[in-house]
Structure formats: C-alpha cells, structure tokens
Length: 105
Image 1 (cartoon, one colour):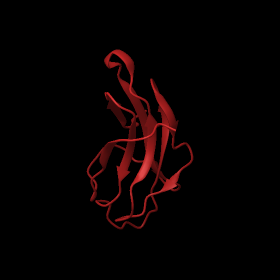
Image 2 (spheres, helix red, strand yellow):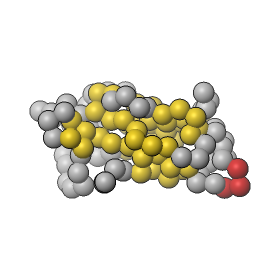
Image 3 (cartoon, one colour):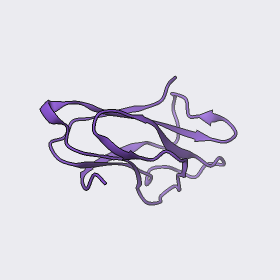
C-alpha cells in the first residue's frame, strides 16, 4: 500500500487541509479521502471528495493537541474511479498540505 501519510505534532487543536490551488485540469476526476487516523484525530474525511483544480481547500482531518509530544498520523488516498489510487511518480500538479490551528469538533 502506497498511501501518503502526514505526521503531525502540535501543541494546539488543529485542522489538516489539502490545498487544491496547484492541481491542474486533467481528463480524469480525482477524489481524496482519508484511510486512517491515529492518536488524537477527532474527525476525518471518510467519503471521497472531488478535487476541483484551483478550488478551495478540503478538510482532511481535525484533532486535539496530543499530550507529551505524541505524534499523530493521517493516512489518505487520492484516486479516480478508472485507475484507482494515485501511485508514486511525477504528475503535472503538486500536493500541498496546510496545518492550521482550529477547533477539533
């Protein structure tokens, strides 16, 4: 399994977002969803969300500040119905993540 993983260390409640501004138009429609979350993840995107190139940010997960410098992980998948999950390699777009202070829900 080649699912991307984001590791988080935070001293406050947090929100993890996917920035779609750098995605370029492709023939395929791409979707994102989380496949797992550990530690202090309080909610996460479990249903596929359409990535709209140049669109708004997509909330991947929310969580609370972990105790004792504990590490939180969020694993996710970028996929399309025809080809399945996006494999490692070079693509005409960049994936950018944003970690913000925010409510954990």
